[in-house]
Image 1 (cartoon, one colour):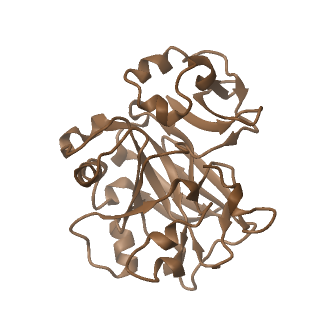
Image 2 (cartoon, one colour; image 1 turned 90 degrees about the vertical axis):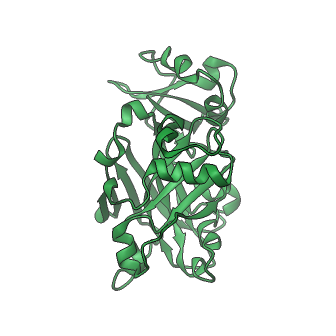
Length: 296
């Protein structure tokens, strides 16, 4: 199944089941279930899968074309990001291979949805792309072992962990360069594990204006998804709707010669086989695109 968050035609936030077929659209679960008001709240309900499966095959309420997407989980309790987690990215940075996952955080208001503009802030022009696999947690967990982590996943999505590189490098702490409003993109939807399949068999590609900048399979990960979930669950309680962003592969703009930065008018795509394509354009922070307009 595929689940998405979006803005309904009446301007209110909603979430639903993506219906493929001759006329792709979404079945508005928020309206039909009459209970949870967000996808995060749905994931917190026991047996939500059975409730959603009952709508498979139904006619969509809204067409997919022209739908205004929100971040898959607009209101997560936590967004945990993993740095330096691909062998190819370690090689281009010149760092040593980490012995433990490098974790930093993002805030919910730094995100935009599929099709929405990512905002280059007024503070810097060094706006870099990072295509990543996002994992959405499906239950409240603490101290889970890697062998049990797969059962705790609600689904997978694409993420562009857009980075303001000079601010990221002000100190050894990454957070300032990773949290400018509107710099991260999350979407287009969540794909449940039964549909996504084996992580290692999937491929990620990031394209800037149609040119492939990053390309890798997930067997290049240093710490795999079960290890990351287990590690994070030991230092914090993971809740339904929490997001673990698993790191980026080699090919980022900062380590190219000359460096490649995203600029207004650019189009950036993150594609993961088994999920689809997250596509965003780049705009400058301006009165027309204020950071206050980023939905939380």
